[in-house]
Length: 399
Image 1: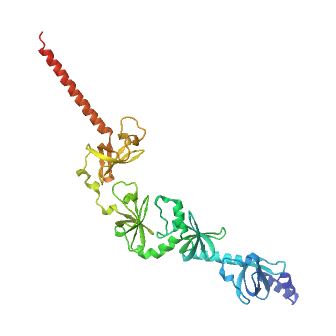
Image 2: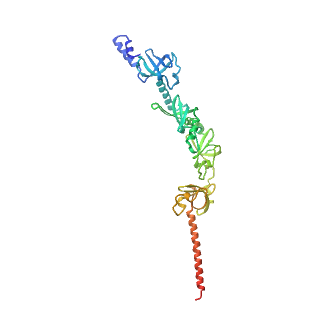
Image 3: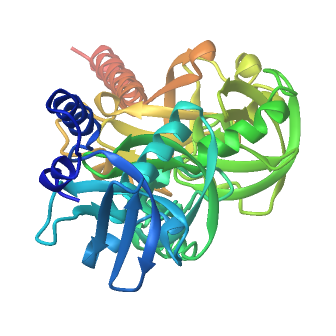
């Protein structure tokens, strides 16, 4: 009901009229306010609300549709809320909105979930290479791939983005338990985390483990940077490539495959992240390296890899060494691969051993220099022998 009509219908003394008019005007809602009322009539096209018998509100067109389900299937006599859009429309009624009211209420509920750190269900509607598109309380949100728990994280060897997307697409239609990470009603931005909800449930389980514990489990994924191991009560830990073995390895897949049973030691706990080591349970072969090798020894090894800074060489199953590019030749070379390719079996001279650093230095240059010295020494001996023979002949020749 318009303000003018409300004031005209108030009949009393002039002073009372002024007082009543002021009270009524101050009681009138403002644009953006949420008002309560009873449903007079309801259809698919419009809903009329009685606001305390003083005003009538109209909800129509797109303002009938909203994120909240509570406004659906309204019938006469039901109490509900709506947001004021206009104080007086062309019909002399308040123009109201369920859509905006639902929008406000839904985003407020999401802000409350974040503030209280509560979990909520999220339905996966689609996926892209960055994560999952979800619906939370009828609001569209995003679940980044980094916020998936170990159970759902799409690990793909080589990090193929197309294969990762394929795995993510497989979650469409599923419901995840999530926590709200970021909520911004003004920009309609909602970010959630499935991992955060999972971590909350795993707190008691994680507390059972400490650094130094030995666990047994099965490898669930093999990646370029290490292997993931499932153990205990659906926990998962990472064995980084540097913790797989004492020797240098190019790819974890050279040693392990999915399904392999292993033992590992817990070396770090960081929230829900568990870091393991397999090599900690294996005796360090570098501790007794002096029993095998010494500086100056000439050894035979197989070239494993050629890099810009030299050749990685396998001396035995445990000990690998590096022939730095500066130790490959006296002459300038374009690359280490011009000297030897992977698989080449060659002899080297050991020029340094650092057990604590797990380093062993090899040299072709020092080996070749030794050969040159030996060759020169042999040539010098031969020359001296020839001179001695000549001198002997001179002495035997009669004057």
